[in-house]
Image (tube, rainbow, N blue to C red):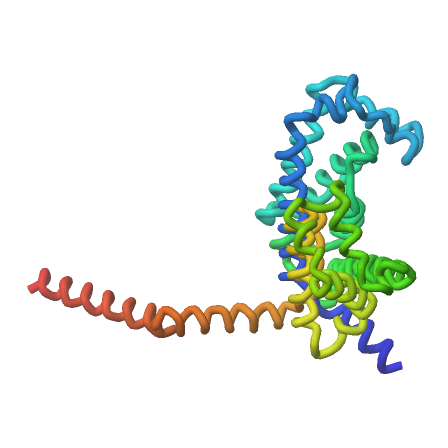
Length: 318
């Protein structure tokens, strides 16, 4: 009973992961903007009425609403309009303006583009769509948070949904690796690195080193399998740091930019608000130590300026 009582209290009392949510929103916004700027010059060719796009929203959500949404691709102008809406939603997420409305706009635009040309996406696109759906339940960036309110309860449900989604992603990927023969033998990353479609040229030479290949093969597999356990242990922050480094490597060596941005955002999402506060304090303290400044210096300077101003006023008065 105590576990159920504590769980209900966690859900109902305070809104959690507020800083992590903002980091995740910024990451998703940046990933979407990257796609918009890289793909917008080819929008007519990819999604336009005479382009490569062949999918229909009606096949996913039914003919009534689907046929209406499919009309946006009947002209190049309206096709660009979808991209403008997607960019607008992404900008709102990055800067924290009307985040719930921005999430809804980005979700609809993203859904239309992905449905129109499914082959263009990667694993990161599916994650973005899922997180955008869960993001509709999160509190807006500057919303008032009433302790114990329904909105706080719904926000925390959305937080749990995002967390469990990453658990599922990592655990599924890790277990699939564990069943692979190349992963057992520690050579999977070598084979991946030698495929031109999945790697950059610099990666192919580096992964001919057996030590690098073995470490790079086993670390992701064990990292993903053990992620749910590590995230509730004392090694949570170092574990998340390893995940960030891993996804930076994926972005650099495999070129999966949008996927890596979103996954890094999901990693940083797990850092709690008190942990973010302590990290920021440590960073500030380190900055003051490196620069030789004192935290009291701004106050001392302000007091000196105020004293000087008073002396000037007295002089003028005399």
